[in-house]
Length: 270
Image (cartoon, rainbow, N blue to C red; front, side, top):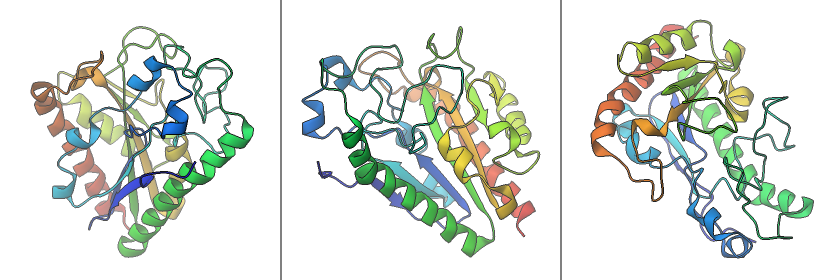
């Protein structure tokens, strides 16, 4: 079950910002795909096209960490012990067994057992999180502060998780605990000022494991998650096409949000 390709891609930047993309991966190792249903192999819950959407990151000088394997292999934004991020609410687990729309991923009797899950943790989860922690430490050592932007996207309508249509921009700061005071609100104002987009701060999505675990403002690590509605930049039905016209409208808002992250870092560096 050794990974056939690297588990992540890391580009080290020059400014105190790391953009993490844990759910963009599409690779499923052959021994896993053989156990999956054909509909699962369309990978409907992937954070599609985020690298293309965030094509300005190199210009900003940001570090970028990108997962290569599908979240169906293992979900890098869940705790290693598979504890529920939203107690009392439905969610998918560390090694999902169904899609967001509750379609089974695996053929009968083929769901991963505890030993397989632990092996996937060692092969995929651990390397990504070591790279994430090491890069944040490198950034803070070099700049005195490290800003983490955890980039996600999701289908605009998922009744399993929320009623109606999701707001376009869903910012999460773990209720204000994963970053310094006022940063989440400042970002919310930036997104709201774009005019045509709806915005929520710490609504249905308050930030997953990455935001909550690595956001330690007392130690000058500040983390924010963005769950972007896919309807703002792509078609939401298979084959999930990228929309250049929609992306052209939303991309400047994303860039402005990250520019504000960097401005905030400059204002608050120790």
